[in-house]
Length: 254
Image (cartoon, rainbow, N blue to C red; front, top):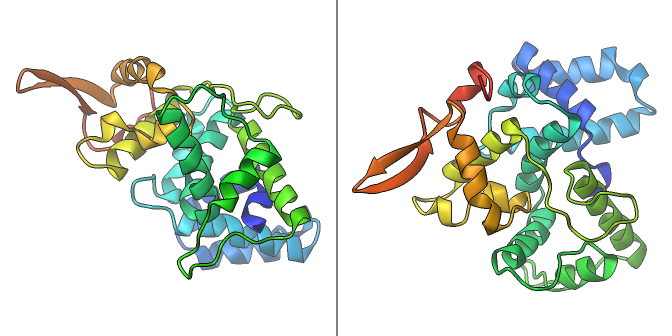
């Protein structure tokens, strides 16, 4: 539960990624984090918690996402903090099974184009969590106060990635996606799924993009050097121009 309460912590996650890119291993990163930069943290306990959670997201990241050592190059081309947050959010969802369960439920509702707007109220989130069954047969069972803090943590993350616009908002908006997070979401979708990825691009669904916007986003990606339409058996297919994430070395839209 503490994963969500810590949120995305964009600045500190970026700092850890830069240390890892410079040092090459997590042991050296840990040494710098605690012994040389502890003065920047409130307490050693909170510093340990943040380090544990953020490094877990990076260490457990699927190969479908950029290696954390490449994130500093990705972030260099981001236009805003929101762009970085949308990228880090994909690592967050991949690492946290409980968050992933909830995001999958929202993505499924989005894919079904349900008439009700998606909302992130405590009631809706609690109803989703109540449907969770663990592998040992047990169900979701946390104290009400803990669950409420978890729900607020989810809403905090959604504000960071532009799904919720204001502090008191619970209804989902379609977040804007700039070029760099779009390319990460596209490459992630391509890598994580089979040949039918384009009918359910997971990265775009995770970022709450409705199907009616996919064609526009596909076309935007194809205007960059990273993606292109290719004719195959008389049909146009959208594919990476080279390997996924090869654009990182030169920038997203150069």
